[in-house]
Image 1 (tube, helix red, strand yellow):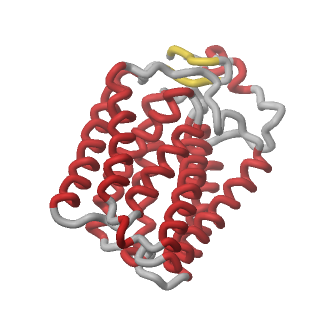
Image 2: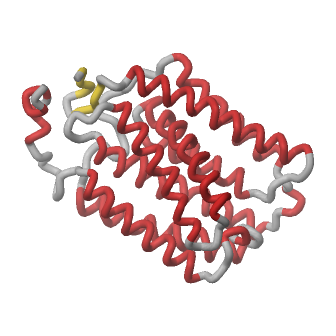
Length: 273
């Protein structure tokens, strides 16, 4: 099928764009974000496993770099003026099982908060955790489920691939943790786990077609896992929750790969390929 014939608006630039949405442009924004974020985090000289040992560490290694990265994204959005970054042009269906990962993710946040070691969380560390959660929800969702997702929704790319590529891209973004001293084995596990989380966060956007829901979910999840972890039996509960999120995310991804492989999101709505 000819893309222009299927969707004539694909060849007409938006009156608001300063540069057309494309994967190479989004990749350039991604690189700029990584350079600023990792550069600021690395300059702190604090190993990754010590980022949240204290409020001072957290502000220097997470909050300040996230502010820098957020400014890069805001500057790009103000200049590029892309559409659909924060709101879909059409609502995608939420097939029955797709609600399960969303629900379990919410339960996971509640469980993390309930079993966290609150007694050993100083007030300055708690403040840093809240700030980091808000910033990571804004920055990473704007980048991956906003700018990158928007760039993938070009050339009538099937939504199944948009979901998968944006999720895996998000997951393997965490390879950058090698630069700040995280062990290779732990980073690989984190990449795989984060790819699954990317699927769930994509679903949060899909619920109402709004990026804001994913921002809130992402921020709350990271706040809950940044809290000092429990030990013993409660640590096993924590691991169990994350494993369950991973399993249901994989199932949801398989469902979308089957159901959305002939659906594309365009300026005029959903397009059957």
